[in-house]
Image (cartoon, rainbow, N blue to C red; front, side, top):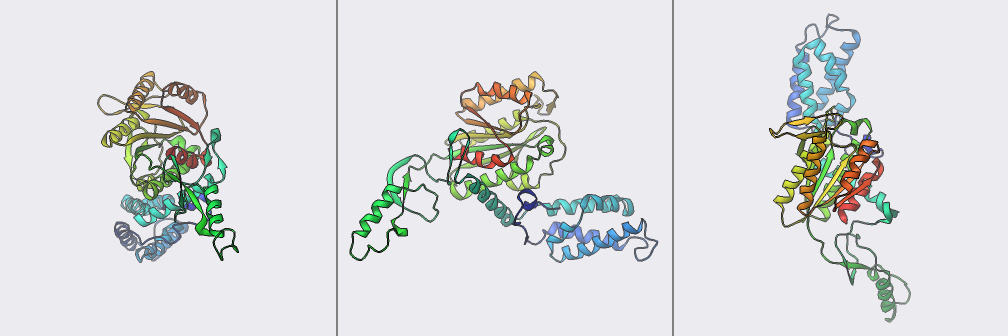
Length: 385
């Protein structure tokens, strides 16, 4: 029922030892236990439903007692959708609504759990970047915290993120070995030197993530979530002077926290309202006018919705000329603000290629094709550049 990183990545689950359930979810669990206790004929064969239904209700009751006592992982044993149908049929709509409320409350993550997920997501992205070459020959190295090289070698710091200065390292080792009693070891840790860099310019970054249902049908929503978590963690730990803004866009766009994106239900929603998302990105740029603006767009389709003058969304499929016109006009407005805009396209179909050809003509726009595995490293590469 809760977000599980294992379902996205495989391997060890950062939430294998979850935090205690939130108070709202515990209250819903106790309310549901009370409804079960008051069910007619609950202790006899006169209980409504089939024997299988009664077995499911008994299993639910055991899990709810464990959950209310603090065993948050117990809900992973249940199929909330199937149980909701059984409860609604046997105990009425109220029971199904209480279970849905419990699921919503439990689905969220504590700040500590969210931080753990972000750390794992960033670690996975960095592991993919190290030692490989990106598209166009761009080297995917470590997360360098600085900007342009200064030419001044520095002792290696604890983060180990700056590129190695091999010449300076050899020189330090040679100078040390020239001293009496130091010729036995060719290289020591204190000899290592890294390349010094200028402080990089702070940025106002907007990450726009497509929330349309096609992202789910193409199994791309998981990669988009991982990428957002990794980028958020990278900014928080390495570039706190930057201001990261996360926007999700479906029929309409909305500003999200990483926790909101993790908890997003990815229900079937029509529309890819990039017009609205770019407008929110432009507002973020204006709030941080002294920072270098950067917009990163993750999508698998061309725009199919826009905001009308009344603020409501207008959806059309195939996309109407008005949708494309307003979206491109908003993109031009973002570019006039001095932003660098990168589109990460996760599909390749004729309509998307036509939209790509339209936006690529604009100075300041870059288009990158990616699949689910490449998305995180490519987004982080582009951000760091």
